[in-house]
Amino acid sequence: MEETRLPPGQYVPRGLPVIHYGRVPPFKPESWDFKVFGATASGAEHAFGWEEFSGLAQTTRVADFHCVTKFSVPDLEWRGVAPAAVVAAAPPAPGVRHVMIWAEYGYSANLRWSDFTAEATLFATEMGEKPLTAEHGAPVRLVVPHLYGWKSVKWVRAIEYLLEDRRGFWEERGYHNVADPWREQRYSYQEDPGDGPP
Image (cartoon, helix red, strand yellow):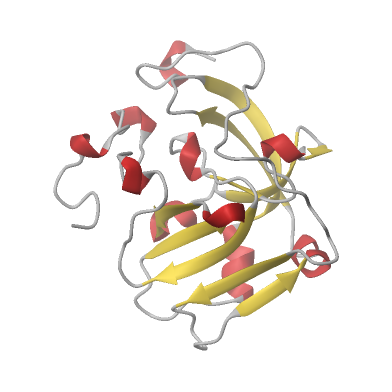
């Protein structure tokens, strides 16, 4: 990784470290589902089974990955479903400006709508032309390359459309609400007015 591509305070490790909170959940395709709820355009919850979700249009992204623990891994290739495909199938209500991404065991991370729908953001099912492994978030992991890695939620199960921002799991525990690695937004005490909910 070129020095100019490395955010401040980051280094390039050997390999791709595995970091997550809690145990690795089992994947059972026959009972797995992916829900979209909250402020939907119809007011109803949408649910996708594994076959339906994996049948959505696929796209590939190559991007660097930046962890708040200070490592950055360059040029990871991800393949999966762009948020635009999910949004088209389950549209939000007018006024939605944020989302909460929900994962197994109640883990969550909040995102601004602009970060969720950014071109590089992806619901990844593959990494490096191979299916995601369980420890890297299989069957579905959100990848938000331009933010710190805790926003790239593993084992995603749902999207909640929000009319107002709300802090997720790590944000409630002192992590920065926005998480821009180029601005070193690691902790909530660094937040400026407007960076997060009151």
